[in-house]
Length: 202
Ligand SMILES: C[S@@+](CC[C@H](N)C(=O)[O-])C[C@H]1O[C@@H](n2cnc3c(N)ncnc32)[C@H](O)[C@@H]1O
Image 1: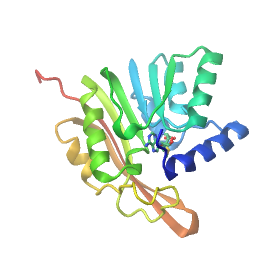
Image 2: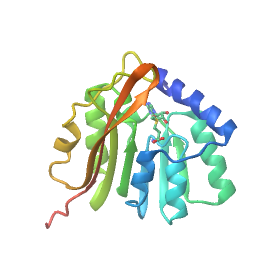
Image 3: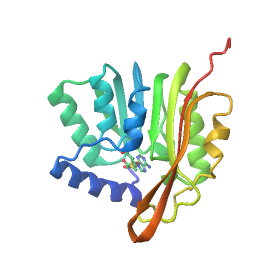
Image 4: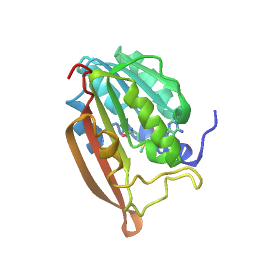
C-alpha cells in the first residue's frame, strides 16, 4: 500500500499510544458519540477509540485506516472484547464503499489528501449515508499554522466555509470552529459538522 509521511507520522504515534495504553477519545470523537447509531463507518478511524465506544453502545462499526499499528490494535481488541468492530487497512484516498451506513464519521482525515481528492472523497462519503442518516466530518481549515503531521505533497487546508457549503442541502445539527494550540506557538484550526441527510420525500 502506498503510505505517505502523514500515515507514518500517525503510525508511530499510535504505536506509542498502544505501549502507553492511551485510548482516550479526543474532543471531536466525544462530541460525535451521542449521534451514532446502527451501522457506522469510521473512515480514518485511528486507534478505533470512537469505534469501540460506539460498539459498546450497540453500533456495528466498520473502521478503516492506513495505519498498520492502528488496524492491528483494533483487530486484536475487537476479538478480545467481542465487540462488533470490523477493521481493515486501506488507503482511503480512493477506497470503494459497497454499502450505505446509518452514520458516517470522518474525523481528522480529509486534510491529509490533496484538495481535489479530499472533496471527491467527501462526496463519496455523503453518497454512502442512507437517507435520514448522519455524517460527522471534521477537518483542518485555513488559519492552521502547524504542519508537522502533513505530507509535503498531499494536504489540504479547507476554506473555512467549505464544509458548510458541501452540506448545504442537509439538515445541520452542529457546525463549529475550534482552535487548538500546537507546539512552537502555532495553531490548529478545525471545522466540524454534524448533519442529517434529507429523505427524498421531504
Ligand atoms: C488525525 S488522525 C485522526 C484519527 C481518528 N479519526 C481520531 O479522531 O483520532 C488522522 C488519521 O488519518 C489516517 N490517514 C492519513 N492518510 C490516510 C490515507 N491515505 N488512508 C487512510 N488513512 C489515512 C492516519 O493513519 C490517522 O489515523
